[in-house]
Amino acid sequence: MPRQRPVTIRDVAALAGVSVGTASKALNGRGSLRADTVERVRAAAARLDFRPSQAARDLHAGRTYTVGMITTDTIGRFSIPLLIGAEDTLGGGQISVLLCDARDDPIREQHHLRVLLGRRVDGIIVTGRRAGTRASIGTGLGVPVVYAFLASAEEGDCSIVPDEAGGARQAVDHLLTVGRRRFAHVTGPEHHQSARVRADATVARIAEAGAELVTAPLYGEWSEAWGRQAAGILLAQGAAFDAVIGGNDQIARGVGDALREAGRPVPAEVALTGFDNWDVMTLASRPTLTSVEMDLTGLGRAAAGLLLRAIDGEPRPGLHRHPTQLVIRSSTVPS
Image (cartoon, rainbow, N blue to C red; front, side, top):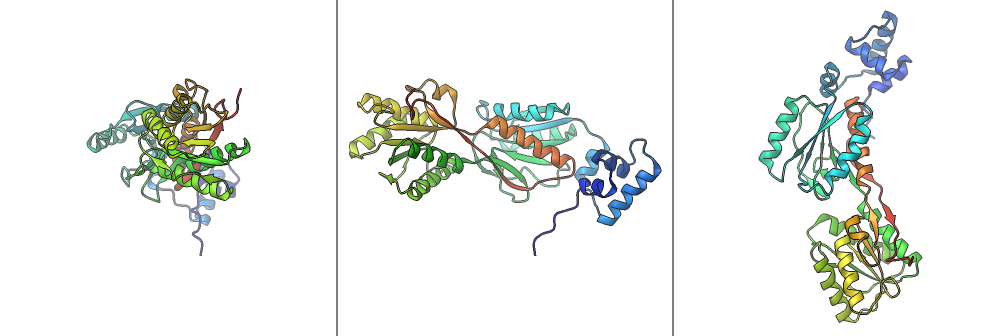
């Protein structure tokens, strides 16, 4: 039997024929409402057996209009776009974001968590410098938590991550569209979740399309140096490839430099894609690099939206995937 969706404040409001705000005030004894309105809302709540969560009760008792963001991304490569996106959404409700850098230190992270809870923040967003899975920061915190860019290992937590597999498929499909059929894939460390997810999706989509993967994915470092080295390996093998899919932009730029030096121009002979759409790399590459954009700012907006829903008593637990977009430049389509 499918699990029944929990009753929310919106259900009560709909049955009573009032707004969510009015229903909330009636159930919490706030505001100046007519007696018949309060009675109608309470009757609807009783009929639906509505039981607000402890977190919702605490938040309705007094909002601080602040949200905490805990990150391990010291340089801000991923957390700053997320922060900007979250502030885009939260700013509309005059909610401020308090950013805390945990630096991959569990003790520091717990300290930040205690401080945020002591300040009675309305919710917390947890993020980091790489996609993947991490341990939950805790249970029974009294405030909702959303994990963004990385996922919580607890299935009951709310996590939103970029659709990396979808981005890899977009890159393959684009290369097929421009006539490429013999692929190589150069990516980061095999133990890294993003490298595995992107490689698995790349290999599967190439096979589905009936195209050729000229060699098994080449795993290495997330660096230009590895990209140059991997291109040398491909050329030494004599593999007849006409497209290379880089696991990230640094790798792809290194591949492109090595191919150019070897007399294999991009994209005339070899089309090339990256991943992350980091403009420091993509726009400085020669030619400019086609890359998968993870839309971290949009992901931050979506994470904040999920947090607001949870604050309003409508949590959406589980793993949510945020769509990616391929940004096409001269490395695949000559300008």
